[in-house]
Image (cartoon, rainbow, N blue to C red; front, side, top):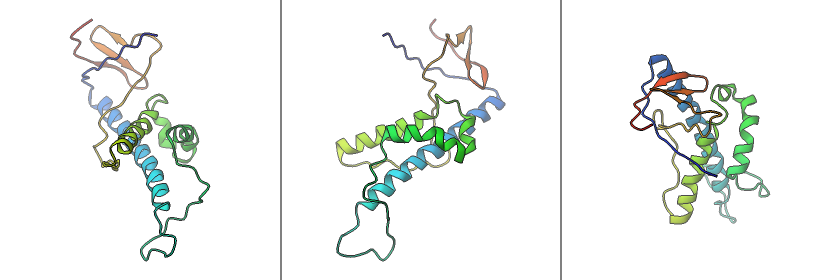
Length: 157
């Protein structure tokens, strides 16, 4: 199977730019929510057995498995019912936030430092559109789902 990856510098108009910023913020929320699940799971496993903390306790069932990438990706469709804004983002773009988090988690596991951090407003800076039915690039535009044609600077055909 041949896989081609291209990055494009886009030049959206103000409405398209606002839409993309809103999508990035929704993805940032999904990233932070998934990271909170991981942090809560980790913190629930740190409690000393012989005493309780005076500040806080994370009480999570010991049978609960680590919230892995597959589990969190499978929970995204269910989360749309609880968080309706998730349905505004194309279904292929949403999982990118969870995958990005777990890539950071894997780097943390390998190195032993650099626990993934929560993203603040404006820190989620990219969206990934993994596949299209047909070539989205026409002349000097790229056609994105739910947004339409956006001008690009095409250096190579």
